[in-house]
Amino acid sequence: MTLTYKTVGVVGAGAMGRGIAQIAAQAGSTVRLYDTQPEAVAKAAAELASQWDRLQEKGRMDEAAVRGCKDRLKPAGALQDLADCEMVVEAIVERLDVKKSVFGQLEDITGGKAVLVTNTSSLSVTAIAAGLKHPQRFAGYHFFNPVPLMKVVEVIAGLKTDPQVCAQLAAYARDMGHTPVQAQDTPGFIVNHAGRGYGTEALRIAGEGVADFATIDRILRDQVGFKLGPFELLDLTALDVSHPVMESIYHQYYDEPRYRPHVITAQRLAGGVVGRKVGEGFYKYADGKPQLPP
Ligand code: NAI
Image 1: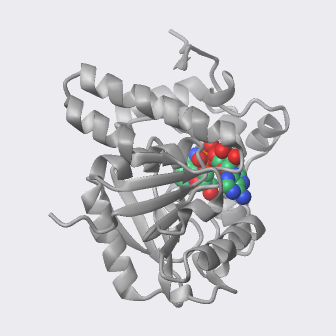
Image 2: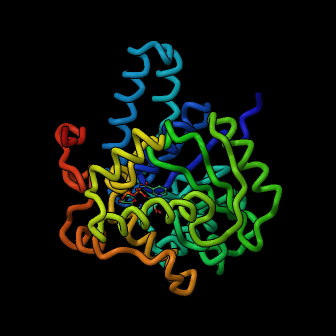
């Protein structure tokens, strides 16, 4: 099998960047991982190393494979270190102005030769590409959390994206053991658009006092068959990520009432009770595990 991209850059070493770096290294690519916070890169590298050690202990990777992944993961101290990357995926803060500025720099740094992709959840791929010199080499590449376990990736063409670039990205998704799905550049693409029905309606059910969070989760998880209840999912994604996504999709559809976000998440976000990563969201967490009611 020929690897589609031998050297890949990942910008943003948070929850998503770390996961993308993991599966790219496991596919055999050299991965240059950059973040404006050097400590985020160091933390991600340490967590990935222990993640690979755990996979070895469980017999899911052998020693040589683990050594290879650790060698291929290259912490980058500056964006310039990504100059030789054939593809760069961005997983930074969900802000159009910041993403546009990073991609403008990446185009110069890579000499316009690299494929540049965004992991945006809700921003328009076409809008991020506007102002780039080579918008044909730019696309959306939307992964899900946790990246190694969630095997789907949406490949999103902006108005000017070359279809060959999407085909290449789909091939690389398969190299990483993921399933690519082509989506149009519309607010929320496929999954986060469908997710409005799941999350927003569950918030309305809770807001109207029909049932509490834990009951709604328990029914949808254990009886209806979703892997996570809507509030467990909101806790995993974290409200500082998901509430702005809900607002963005709502506004991009010209305030369509079906997608209206809920005051419950706005208030919890304002209070900092954003989810699992801070130890408290709709549930309290101890050692990363939810303290579910009996
Ligand atoms: P995060 O907050 O865990 O990590 C973001 C990282 O980006 C931080 O380490 C931050 O220091 C870094 N960063 C911010 N500005 C930067 C810049 N200008 N240059 C380099 N690094 C910068 O965020 P997370 O959850 O990893 O999300 C990242 C992106 O992925 C967002 O666009 C989000 O919408 C998208 N996404 C998130 C999902 C989730 O479930 N958390 C799922 C799918 C997409």
